[in-house]
Image 1 (cartoon, rainbow, N blue to C red):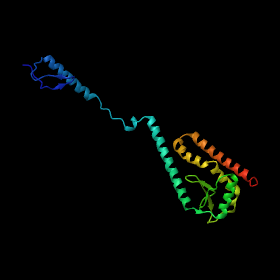
Image 2 (image 1 turned 135 degrees about the horizontal axis):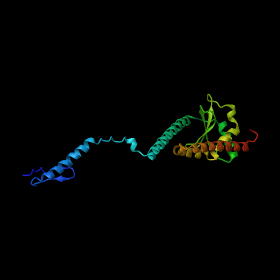
Image 3 (image 1 turned 45 degrees about the horizontal axis):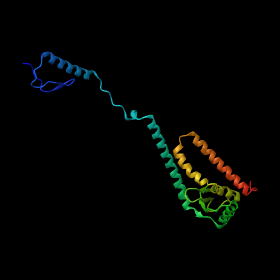
Length: 212
């Protein structure tokens, strides 16, 4: 009697039922197919899986680098703003002499005088632009220097407020986080700062032409 193969599958879906009688040629064909597949599996090397970074596209790599750079810029700016904000909160009210001088210069420029604060450790007068605009005046050991009392210097700082340079500084933070990678952005940023300083100098020169 012909042998029966207990319903097992070999190779290309060869199924021989228990009750099926097969010829020796059919058995040889099944065996040859099975042995051939085993030999092929033995000589075919198993390919190692690709590392995860090899499956990431170049576009994804660039997007990830941009996101990390933007996050770093925002963290850096946040630390600077927080440190300066803490110093601004600790600043003392300006004496009435300086407040009156600022009010007189503001009236000449046709604007409302901002709040004036005295801040230790600042090299030169500056404008606080995040939140309500404030004029921060430098002090040394709690006293102002004589050069810091020049009306033309006050006019220069107030011109930044009148020109809405405070809003430009706020937008600059967002632009810095977005376009930090582009060389053209840094060139434009420098040009904007230079133009702003020259414009404020022109305001001060117009208001006090004798104080060149």
